[in-house]
Image (cartoon, rainbow, N blue to C red; front, side, top):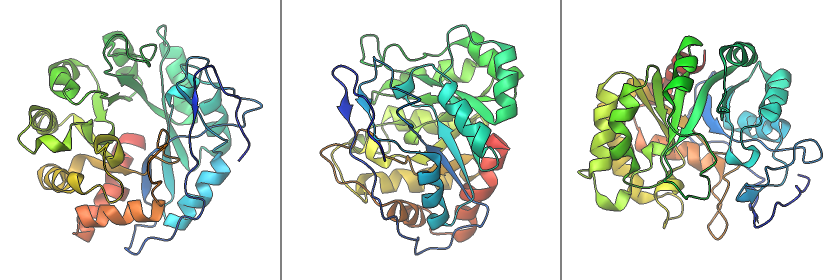
Length: 299
């Protein structure tokens, strides 16, 4: 992995575990990893000057080798904040590896239907929006925007929503339901696991699932369990509750290469997919989450 040039005040991410191990539990041959990030090569795709972090190159070839070890076939590349609203990187990735990868973009403010048509042919399936409060370090990233959501709906896409504060999902629930398209919640919905199953944030997620238009990614447990390392035990009751509540609208993601994990223990990706088996012991339900559910969202 080559080094990337560092924008002012940016922190360099520690790299992922270079030796992913095969999972101990069976996975479906056409399974999906529904949340990854890719970076580089740095010589062609420099980080946005406002990015709070940079990463060594995390190339499609690097990740697909990990995907093969995990025994999965497809993955969804999510545009992270590192490149801002520049589509060139994800376009390059999907042009070369569109047989195995789909994409989620960070839309520009002037996002148009003709752009959606072009990107959709490459394999883009959604737009990512954030719920960070004003003044957050990523305040330049896209917020909920009904016009952009309408463009996404016309293209058959969804909005992928990323909460940042633990109470954001409860505050945003009604606005998310008012969007014209389907919604996918990043990283469990980003509630605070220390507040228990009855907290307003998690109850809001269950209400969103009950709409039939909202999905949840069982990804990034370390994002919500900020003070824990693998196996992020405080997340287990929430994962099991979600699997019992709406298994037909859950997908799984590794969050490779696990950005912004400095100062924490880097998980092994084989361990992360085995953690899904701890959360969802029933193999048929687990296979549905890994293989059947993603096809509805990503084709």
